[in-house]
Figure 1 (tube, rainbow, N blue to C red):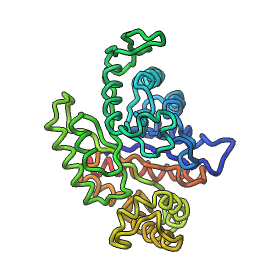
Figure 2 (cartoon, rainbow, N blue to C red; figure 1 turned 120 degrees about the horizontal axis):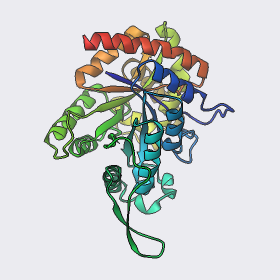
Figure 3 (spheres, rainbow, N blue to C red; figure 1 turned 45 degrees about the horizontal axis):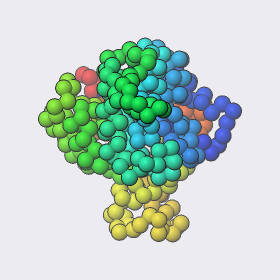
Figure 4 (cartoon, rainbow, N blue to C red; figure 1 turned 45 degrees about the vertical axis):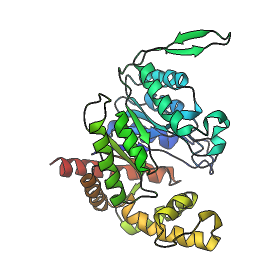
Length: 352
């Protein structure tokens, strides 16, 4: 199983050294055999606000690493012209000597579409169109455009990328249709466990593999399922629980609509927008216990191995470890030695 580091920091705390964890974490990943470093695209909100452009953060990662893949998790395709996406990431591909990969997302926050408001109603369709056009540009094809003088032109991108084919994923919050579509397009799928449990995910992975094998995309293999998991490991499970309790509860609170959907047995038929603060806190507290046990990489290395066994059984190929939800940078960096121990133990266990 592959291991990556995933970033999605809350910008609320503010810092004069706010990208220290990104850079030092990337260096650790690069020198300890991790597969990838993922940074997202997030606009106009403090939650995730350190990452408005994954090409910029990806270029920074490329400059301080030599081996680890540099990935966007995700590029919101409908917010950008495909030429701009292909140009920017071709630069990063050159800076990294051929290590980039992109997961494409449709976006869901209406305010994000201040950048391209005309694309909001058709964002899911525009996503696929954009991803396919970026792939064609990456292969050296030119596309038809209208220039500033109103004339038809054909343009391609410069510089040419290092990789002849761009590795791509589709980002899914759990919709089966997105899994099926990713398979049909010959793309990987990047997902998480908010709003779905392992049984749900297993069914969607099966759907994805079937669509991948049946697709006419010409991509070899069986696809790639990357699962984002909040991650913090230590030597004492109870100590880890207390370290992550507040920051992970804050994350769950920010995603209340997803956890309400996943917790219908607790509060069936409840609209999160109509919930009283007390009900929200009840749901967050119950969800923390559930996700600590089954929805993240929390606790000790032995706890992590049990989680990885379950993920391997349902066909997960990569764990993208979201590490920056804990605000103490030193604590997170120190915890990476335990994550590396888990990675090495998993290599021996799953590989053997």
